[in-house]
Image 1 (cartoon, rainbow, N blue to C red):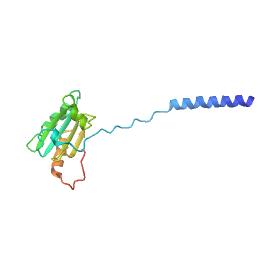
Image 2 (cartoon, rainbow, N blue to C red; image 1 turned 135 degrees about the horizontal axis):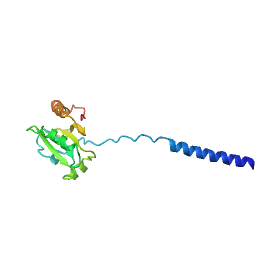
Image 3 (tube, rainbow, N blue to C red; image 1 turned 90 degrees about the horizontal axis):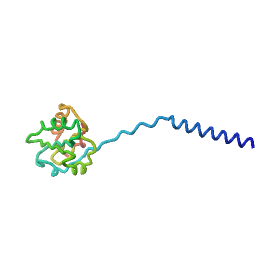
Image 4 (cartoon, rainbow, N blue to C red; image 1 turned 90 degrees about the vertical axis):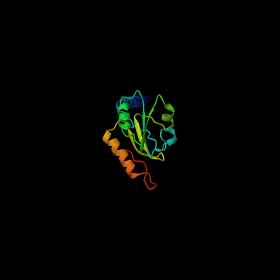
Length: 150
């Protein structure tokens, strides 16, 4: 009987120690969420589908940095580059269609709608202009290896 009591005490102590250790363990770091950037857009969904290049800014009025990104993108408007701003409140359907889950999201697409450069969050004007220039320089040939993400 004495052995049974000692075994029970040892089991209880082991359970208590295991619970203390479990509570002291630091939790694993959260995994970094990967936000969606569309790889292809239907040019008919946006302004000037005939323009060789399209810059789309997916934004929201509640986003502090979106206005800054919109103003940097607006400067790129030309006969060759159409610039569209898609606000979440005004055009939620396009945000949902292209699974935009973070704003600002900016994509540079060619005449076929293939994403050639993209930014999640704010960027410098120089980085944006360089990405657009690089995309335009590389063109949209079938030998391209795929979309570039800046």
